[in-house]
Amino acid sequence: ALAAGRALLSKTIAALEPLATLDRQAPIAAFAAAHREVLRRLGLDGAAIGAEAVLTLLDDLAASPPAMAFPLTRDDYPSALDALMQTQTTRLPANPGARIRILGLVEARLLHVDCVVMAGLVEGSWPGQTRLDPWLNRAMRASFGIDPPERRVGLAAHDFCQLMGQRQVVLTRATKAGGVPTVPSRWMQRLAVVLGEEAWAGLRARGDKVLALAQALDAVERPRPIARPNPAPPLALRPTRLSVTEIETLQRDPYAVYARHVLKLRALEALDQVPGAVERGIVIHGALDAYTREASAGPVADPVGRLVALGREAFAPYWDDPSVRAVWWPRYLRIAAWFAGADADRRKLFAAAHAERSGHLEFETPAGRAFRLTTKADRIDVTEDGRAEIIDYKTGSPPSDKQVNSGLAPQLALEAAVLKAGGFAEIHPDLSIEALVYAKLGGRDPAGEFRAVKVETGVETLVEDTLAGLKRLIAAYEDERRGYLSWAMPQYVGGRSGDYAHLARVKEWSTGTGEGE
Image (cartoon, rainbow, N blue to C red; front, side, top):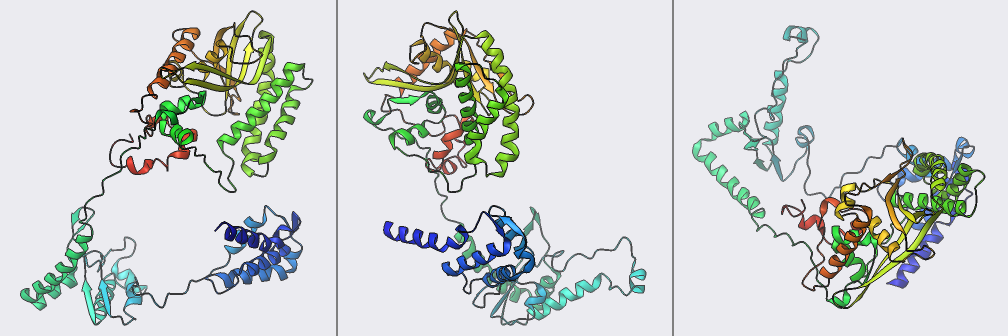
């Protein structure tokens, strides 16, 4: 199977060569000719539905003098072709082998079929309601040569009579519409009177048999929803190394930690994936961290200009995406202008600014296993007298003070615990933690701001309590009876946890059971 896949891939790459070898900018006629050749190589120029219209359009473009003089870039060709294709109308042929067709009254009465089902025989639907014109009375309509409203009722009766002449006829109607009982069409009422009560009862009995068969299809036992996944692997398989962000995931969606560290599953990036919030955060973090390192080595002559230059390097892999150029980049320019001044102000208060520092903390669990907590702090600012502020850049919304104080967002407090334990190289552990700070980088108004978490019990106490809470959490998951529950806190699930939602079958177990609320 792998060899066949490689052969198919090689064949596809070879077929796409005419388009791949074109210059980045070429006349639209050249793109159309190359596109036509690609379709031929792929065998898509046959009798497929709509193929003839597409091939004709490409041939016309390739031979059109205006198209030969109209240059396009490779990125703009799909949009241009899509706009040109929308000007063409292709009528799909009817399937001659179809056994069931849904037709209107005019089409239905012109055909001879084995069985016709006349549906919607409800008064007000067939025939429709007679509506009086508020602008033209009957005399005025007659003077203009406009048919009276009753003529439509006559035409509906004519359609009904003609369709009743088919070999087999089924008359159906809805007993309720919008929760309200309906009135049978006048045609059905007239038939019941003409045929007589006994004959009409016989017809209804035949219809009841068909209706009972249809209702039996829906009378199956309702499937029982699957239970919420809560796998409990043996202790030997449970992780002994997690990052500070994964500790947050362990509280909110333990199943995501199980899938990543026990099952060793990683989400594959989609082909031609549109860059999103994660990529935006990575490039902005990268540019600001690079600038912080340079500024720590010595004064920067043009801070804003240097931040813009570093931003261009970081944004380069995504520059072809229109949303990056139209939305991300203008916001980054505002962030750069703000950050240059804010960083200079902070350097007047702090003796050192450490950017992108990796660290770890180890402790022994009740089961006798060594657990390692890892982290990479965005920034740690230290004063000359030994006070430190730990900063985390957020391109999205930062956690609330309540979440930090409750331990639901433990990242900054755990990074402070790593610092106090000497887990960051080149940073002396004998420091007092002055503040936990989020740098919100929205790029709007304001472009950014440093916001210190309002700690209720004091920063040092919060750090100690959060570390103690981490140890209790790890100890709890050393009990093999405790499973990794999917979406333990659904209201806080987000980010990378979504990579495993389909594996946990969240949409199945959370439907109709109340567990997903």
